[in-house]
Length: 562
Ligand SMILES: Cc1cc2nc3c(=O)[nH]c(=O)nc-3n(C[C@H](O)[C@H](O)[C@H](O)COP(=O)(O)OP(=O)(O)OC[C@H]3O[C@@H](n4cnc5c(N)ncnc54)[C@H](O)[C@@H]3O)c2cc1C
Image 1 (cartoon, rainbow, N blue to C red):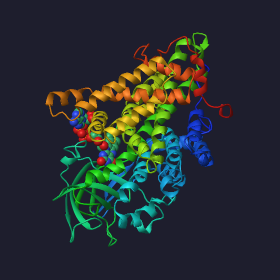
Image 2: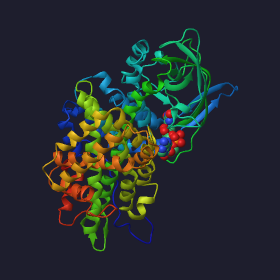
Image 3: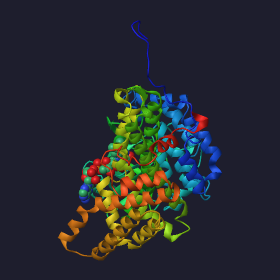
Image 4: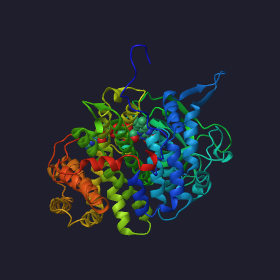
């Protein structure tokens, strides 16, 4: 406060609310997808994630970035990254709540959904630490491809204790796992990896190898082990590379430097060199891609949950601000045009959350139902593409709702904005994901049929939606027919059209879920703007005939948290 004026018309920080109980969409999804048994855990974590304490930890973890120490004072290599205590506290809370292991500890129905909901809240609070949490969760299906390794490492992942000490994994009370695929010369094209591996003695699954080469991006370098791709005589293979060798000495993983990144700054992302580094082969030589793709399928799920979470947090912050800030004689939330913008942002966030959780449901069901396994295959690619693609636009518009305050680092929006493009890059960038959908058309065409039958379940609510689905069905039928064609021009045409196809599939699935789960104003607004495309390209172009204010109010905190 200066002597010249009083501070008026500024909003208050959004703190001390329960991120779970205040989110009506998330609560509904937990019930719908058989995860209601986890309500207490979710509410407990929701209370933490929305607390002033957790919000302060997030600020500190990002304001005090990790520091790499390559050598000790005697000139010996130590390759240690030092994190701020706030980062460790966030890791500790996430691990105590099982965000890294819930479905592997408690394999009951709904566990992937419950865990997805926990991650959804964790990401809203602080995205950087969610990276090692996600990789640890996702490593288990790949580790299980090598039973002898899984027998040692999976029980360590099942622990809910966070142990940040730097010593051999088997001496610790709990561990985290990272992964390394991306090299300088190619990330998406992992078959171009040049890191070499040779067997120490006998070759084969579970046997020791020595790896020499590099990884250009390797996040969370203080993980206890990494799933790493490297070349053997039989091609790309997958290895589990620990930070410490079985003889108790440090493994020869040299952390060269940490990346100076746009966002995700609490998380260390490193460049690593392997100098005859020790690792065990997971599965068979030459099977690296299908082995690691198991892990990637789970981290892709987390990308969509993360992007949906950023959108939820962004719109919640925007509504909170607009309820308090006045301009031209009215609160912003009462200005008709702002209502349209906020309603549209809320709609995008809701559709993303419903889509991500529907996909998480398929992870719970895939082992029991062939149809769900096929749906998981195709829907995870389609949803990863679309939710991650929408996040930066949605978050940018939410930031603008704050006016100039949205652009200032003391507030919550710049960090959300900087996180928002990352999920699209991770685990398959947009084009790569769309090409993966095309691959499914030719290699697993039944997954497309399952996808269509899923969206057809919502027919009969809206003529526009029915027409949209019918056209999509025709398009996919034609695509399947010419999928086998070797004609280069036809193939190039298919590729050039892939984003258009995947976008339409994504919109069909989101609309189907909105019709099924949120009929009335929300579904009608979604269909009008995204299916019938009656509005414009920017957010805030929903039809004025709908009760848009109701969409804003239901997206804000529940009564108990206001
Ligand atoms: C903060 C951060 C942390 C990361 N952490 C890790 C990590 O821990 N481990 C790890 O392995 N990697 C990590 N990555 C790397 C990330 O997974 C890769 O950057 C990503 O997979 C893309 O690979 P690339 O950077 O080599 O880009 P490229 O493969 O060169 O792709 C560049 C562009 O070309 C497009 N493209 C590629 N192929 C085609 C095609 N056939 N047709 C049309 N377009 C195409 C892509 O969609 C992309 O837009 C991290 C990245 C970041 C930013």
